[in-house]
Image (cartoon, rainbow, N blue to C red; front, top):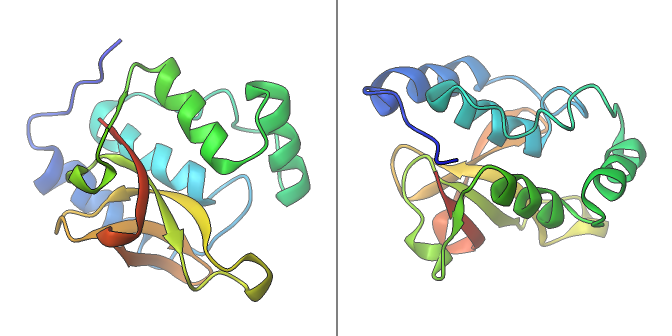
Length: 153
């Protein structure tokens, strides 16, 4: 099943979504990296990539338990890949070719010290030069150069 973007997805739906989430802080099970990316994509396609995960966790431990139960995996990358495959998103052979609105896994160099360099889920920002991800204080942009994996939406 291929996702279809709304006609004015960049100038209306995704733009409005990013404005609304600008100051929304990271919250497990509500506005974490995976749900942020899924909500962004849902805003301009109407499809919820994370439907299988919603309401099934509320902290880090239960999030990773849900990933293991639902996907058989152990990481955010496993969850993103599982959701992408389930919804027919094609993984990019060259992740740095990801375009605006695409689902990406990006290295976050500003993660807590014990997690430096961890991969987080996000989407390619409307400017095309950054990945939009959710941080402790709200929306943040990471260099597109840090993208590790990507899927065409």
